[in-house]
Image 1 (cartoon, rainbow, N blue to C red):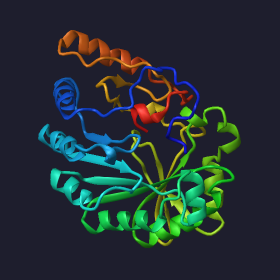
Image 2 (image 1 turned 90 degrees about the vertical axis):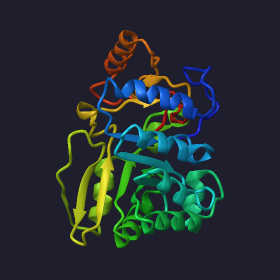
Image 3 (image 1 turned 180 degrees about the vertical axis):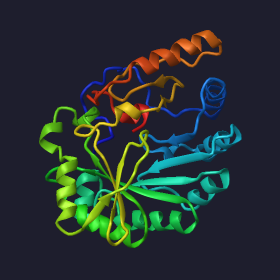
Image 4 (image 1 turned 135 degrees about the horizontal axis):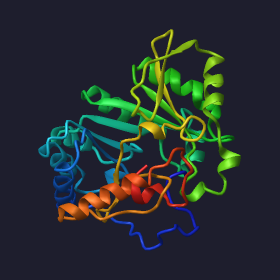
Length: 289
């Protein structure tokens, strides 16, 4: 619901709904690695598991010497994919889990997908030894009542859960104010049942983490009310191989084989970073959420 494009035109209407080719990814990653210390590759979407060559993208990342390679998924993909991804070198899977009750889950996903299948995938990834996190985007009047059940389920399995403020992006750009549920409201909701303390978090982290007295771990990603822009060290690459410096800015830049041109693109991308998150009408399907 909150990632797929709506009917409104995106600022870059020519953006294709396609997949980054392994050949282009390998070329660009090699060029960027000569200029940057890349600590992590995070393959997102849209839904990255629709990419038929996703394990190859993971292999390319590991071959380039990237220690941490992660995938974010909705959990609805073919049998055996998790084993294939781990075999290719995947280190972490993030799963979007927005509710623990089927009706709420269907309402927020906009599809009648079976929730037990997603829960099974999360536990499967954990049992295979991958680091696992679950993400819940909280929308007012959709799933705020699921915040506590989600922490119970994740905490009992020792899986960190992160609650996200709805980002003012793409299809829900105009409805953002009516659906927005703040980090403070999330903490108050959790505080009605749990006692928790803040945990030290690196400056570049998108989430601020907490631990309950039961040793359940949760984070809050508060793009709007508690922005983390100051520590942002991320770049995004779309299916065309172009890079973005900020989700709040839809300008993109080419990855050139000419060193001076690549330096200029990197400098321009970094200049697009904001002091606060303002959002964009561009859907995250095109550049990764």
